[in-house]
Length: 404
Image 1 (spheres, rainbow, N blue to C red):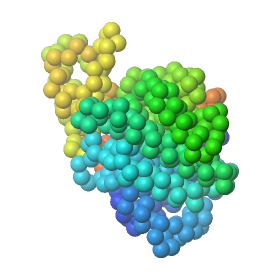
Image 2 (spheres, rainbow, N blue to C red; image 1 turned 90 degrees about the vertical axis):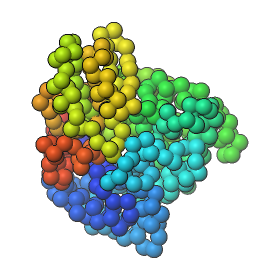
Image 3 (tube, rainbow, N blue to C red; image 1 turned 60 degrees about the horizontal axis):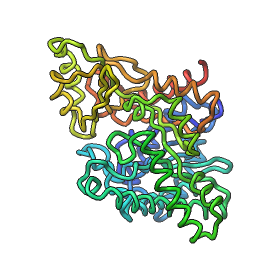
């Protein structure tokens, strides 16, 4: 769906299904129903999530042509994909394994390369296409802590080779495809500063040298290739958790020549902590229902002086509730974007509004994707019918983006 100069969709990682058969069944069940409400009479873009297993089987037999025909019949198209979760993403413990295999491995490279083969077939003419991905690795794995430089080097080189592939595709077909790195809490690339350091100290020097040799490019052309094909996925929830202001992030990225491939529209939980410790019991009571075993829900707290402290998961933060001197917690739990508060708990919805207002005047990207993947693990009191919830999220985003 094209609105106000942007393609707007939702990410199908919301739907359980690791095989292509299950993924396609979910798409057929949900997408036409969503389209009929939010994109009636116009084409509807899909933010496609494929597991490694599904990506392999989609390329077998006549599955890909069949899917392409289905898209045409239902006036749908694929312009962005989610290549972050490699394997199982529902109904089992995911936690830090969402980063596994990381970008040091051939498996992650092969999976991502395969996704681009699929996207190149599905992408309509005159539209750029992107795939979001893990921020290299998980910061607190033992191998990363003990040998970070090696991890950075190996992961970066695999991404450079993806850029080489995308350059070759562009030369042959004129398609513009980009890999969109998604910083998130406790990822090896977690915030704007870490992205800029990696981009300037790792990607550009390693990538420029490699592409000059492999493609016989000038330094200038090699640098342009990297900037064109390696971009950032700005997940609003993730940057809000780090207390980063959208306008400042966009300014810093532009200054350093880093493009944004996609904005994922998502909201985190937040709570203002009472100053008196004896008044904090309600915080524990309100957050306990959000403790669940599937995903990591990192907590970032800030005190009156602006000091930031990180907790790897919600239970560890709750353990410190009666001792911390922080004023505010922000929690990596993707909550419905259309809800501003949950009793005394709030969300970072205002960051979404700021982002959407900003890009009306400064078009940092034309790919917008709503990503609330936690519906099935939300507390029962705020769980709603899935398709109805997707429609409500899309309507809320379209209304904010079109009318403010």
